[in-house]
Length: 301
Image (cartoon, rainbow, N blue to C red; front, side):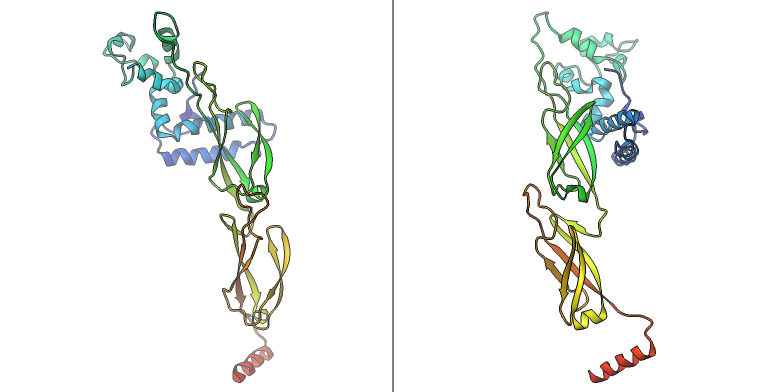
């Protein structure tokens, strides 16, 4: 497998902090996202590399192994189980950089631990065969609008050059991860394939605030409707409804519309509630006649 410098992929230094890695990943993921670059194979490849680099560098343990073993970082546990960790190979110090000293620098980053590993443990010589190991996971970030997760749907994504059809349950939360078993990296020594971990970023293009399965919104009503009562037309997630306003409604009054909220995760066909807060708008720039009428009302009170 050709060596890929994950730091160069994310356009960061090797000393980058976790927050800098996260910031760089989000920037590049938006730039090369397939939705923004339809039919652009180069952008799709770059998007996959960015996700792969983030998968490794955003995980402190994987990053440490990558920094030490380069492209063979996934074999780190096998190397170290054989006592080859710690920057040297004990009695095999002569395999390191010229000058001895027990280092193994000849295999640093872009070097090839795997060829050496296979020659030492690949079979024969009376040594036991390496144990099968499950392949690594693929981690991808998927961005969807809140309207796209109101109902369960199926989407096809191109992951590692494979088209994978995924069922996205209604009501999935921002930051939630779902696991697709068996769609990760190939196993080692005949081990099972890893999994695909899909983390969802849910953007919100609506006026509603979402908290779990409940939705919240603030609606303006005029002073006259608040005092006398009346009927207003209200936007909900699925369309417009008419709502009666009781006479004498106070500012910041809250009302609940049962079942008009968001889809409840993995509970098909059930929904949370919509909570409306009334904002009573006080009229400005009154005419003299209007002021006089309000004066009369005040005097009567």
